[in-house]
Image (cartoon, rainbow, N blue to C red; front, top):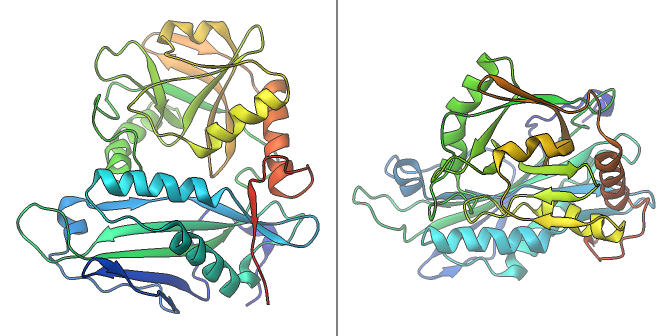
Amino acid sequence: MEIDWQSLGFSYMPVKSNIRYKFSGGKWDDGILCSSDKIELSIASNCLHYGQAAFEGLKAFCCKDGKVRVFRPGENALRLNRTSAHIMGPEIPLEIFNEAVQRVVQDNIEYVPPYGTGGSLYIRPLLIGVTPQIGISASDDYIFLVLVSPVGPYYKGGIKPVDACVSEFDRAAPRGTGHIKIAGNYAASLYPTRKAKDMGCQVALFLDAAKREYIEEFGTSNFIGISHDGAYVTPDSSSILDSITNKSLRLIARDLGIEVERRPIKIEELSSFREVGACGTAVIITPVRNICHGEKIYRFRDEIGPVLKQLYDRMTGIQYGEVEDVHGWMQEIKLS
């Protein structure tokens, strides 16, 4: 299949295969590679009615030395298991998670965008409860699958800043499910995101649901602020997702001698930041130009700021093998 690597966007593309494991009778099977991207479920499957569905997102990169490597898959495995435990799903052993990633990337190796294109192979692990049932309870049977799709650089022609607005809605309740990666959290963000776009903003910024005084996170990304004295500041809250990208950027910041603060951030503190960004797997860092909060507009930069750019460059340099991977984050895909 001929692929125009330069025209790739961030959207789903059918590839050669996906991999699927079934959990039944208290144990996982050996998994199979499937050529079809369709799945057959009972209309009474638990995931369709009661939302027992969890997912992850990570990427494989063709590096400068020609080898294909995946960024921090072990962290995604741990987070998926934290989510699964919360929704009463089974544990996915680390060896099964890693094997699934290895096998599906190996089988679709021709879909990994070449080094220099700015693209990557997006990897989406998914866990769903599939027992047919009407009563509300945890499923007995599950499917763990991993699909892949080639994606291009999120920003074609350079990184572009976005505008955000503080949402009137709540993303997640205290002691709720904001800290795990379940499908329902994202369904809950769709309407607030549409309302933000109706106001001319690309993303919504959520405050804490209890007091609506503290910054939580953007609709699909963690919040980063660079203070006027150059510190990397990000919220500390039990109801936001523990972003692997944010976790990695914090360590990179420390490597670069940047002070890191993970703490509650009052909404009024936006005026104390010289750079603001949203961070996540898809884009690494999206610079934020303006944040609207009622009648007040907090203004930042019309381009990515120097600190966020330094962090972005170091992260992508590690992922593409241009910068030494001193933390051992990149897991090589073994090819026969």
